[in-house]
Length: 111
Length: 115
Image 1 (tube, rainbow over the protein chains, first blue to last red):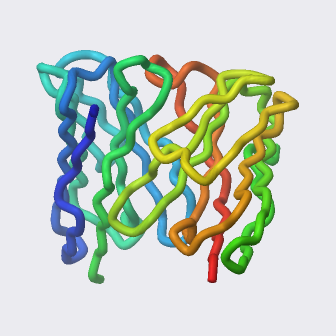
Image 2 (image 1 turned 120 degrees about the vertical axis):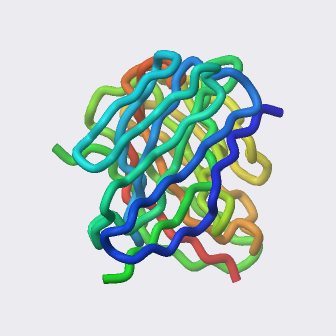
């Protein structure tokens, strides 16, 4: 079946270092969404990418959608302790009725 | 605005007991979802609903039932709880059909332990 894979599973960085998580789908996606979940919290929507090759920025966060619309990445510049949490990508299934989540990348930031 | 509210937030069950998780949203969203979250496995869809009176199976529906009698409520039931159902359960709602333009709004989660 359709799968959304995310790497790495864990990432430990020193505060101020950059961080990137990668998302790959087994099928072409109509769009991709990114969510952040703080420890003990619930997922919160960050952004949606729709166009092939699209790049969007939110302050220190840069989101990219691949040209083939099968992969995406989230890059955080100069991480801060407030960036701690798990980042999920999610894409719609082939029928478009359900959102399939990647396994998530857990980011820890050492002050 | 409360958004998406889940009750209860914590529950401990014995194997074989039944229970119902309630999800309520006040955003007039058509679509509602139940996910479970287990370490290292992301969020897996249990059941979902595209409108009042409709439900559909997700990735891991076995052992669960759902009902959407009112647009604002989505109930998740466990008829005979098993230890494998120990998890954190998240309800979510969306104003559009997921896969097109709808972001998910999540509740705060319900932590269920089955002994």
